[in-house]
Length: 219
Image 1: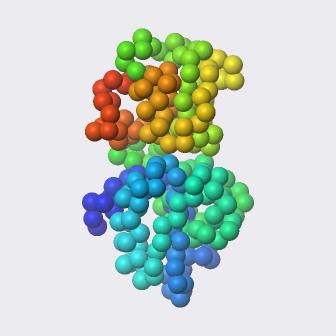
Image 2: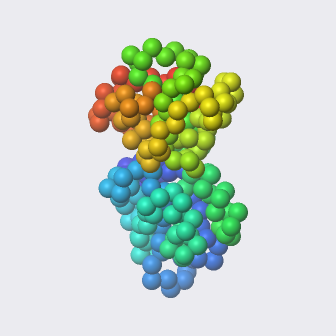
Image 3: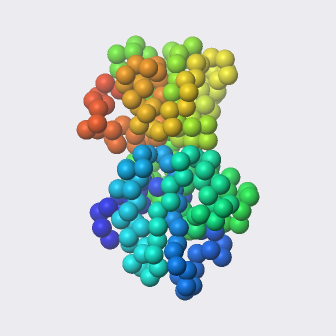
């Protein structure tokens, strides 16, 4: 197993197959492997190509990577038969399972959080913010409405901290990726941002993450 394949396995959230669509013994011309567009297309190619190549060799059928342009597009791709197997976050898995007969195959393990998915709220170190309550009335950047560790978990955390999330924060337009949220906070476009727990480690070498700090962890 290559290092690239191991990194891919640690970076994904949940594997599923559409029942009846994935059968190594069948004569399918192509198996379509999908994932969510949480990174740029180029980054996802680098991340998943080793896994796609590995599966092609092991299964004996050509496996092709499919990346919808939006998170909502994942459901549409499954409905349209454009995805046979895939790696998605837990929320999208539940949403698909509610509509289509899919079968879970594997749960991945992240470097820091293991098999649990956790989010963080980040701010700049020079912001003066020391606790969540300091963020009332401040500008927040989130990934997508349906991003568990880039929106939903953080909203729950703020609610438990006494926020009315519809009134007590200023929500900027969804940033689409965790990288964009991090950059918004770094560049002071946003006062705070919600991203995955591993995001600051991922951005090392891209920007000076020492200027950022974590002010809150989700469950």
